[in-house]
Image (cartoon, rainbow, N blue to C red):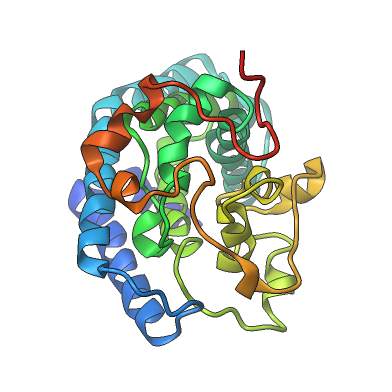
Length: 280
């Protein structure tokens, strides 16, 4: 455990990039051989659009890394945060740290984005993808990337996690962001077992069904236990019924136009079927 934390405590940008790019490349190869859906779309063009959003997310995270570093240093200097108040063995600190970081930095911010109208208008860019695959993972409007950075910083502050644990979390979180959107067939007997604790591709793809109530369920990124705990998990009997996108933005000419999508949060709100928010 010491070796793992020490490695991530000093991990270079090059190594983190290798994990991100290498993991994504592996998942793209995997989904080409074991696809859940045989989607007919221009995969290269689709990927380029999503890579644009991935790029803006990475830039914002790099700029905002100072905030996370400040939280780590503040906690270390003042012995603040949950982990600094507990005398736990390293393995327990890693597990608890990952749980807290995932809950606040991934599940909670995602849940809030689905509950606050102006935040939802930024998040809708992620849901607008009509062909969910491994490249969809970091398809976030730059404004949403800022929300997520702030919640991650809050998670670091609350948890008291060391820099090594934070970097371990971000590496795992980045991989899961791509894994859970990957267009791969699940192993029928194994998926129900894994999805009790972890977010699997099948578990998360239900969240990308184009209409309510599916859209407002299965928020998790790494751990699905938050959805099970707070009653926001949902299952479907037939994954074949899943239709990707969001009912308010189904026009492919809009959802594949970067300029148009960047403007969506600043335009009039479009209520979905089921009246997600009051329309006043």
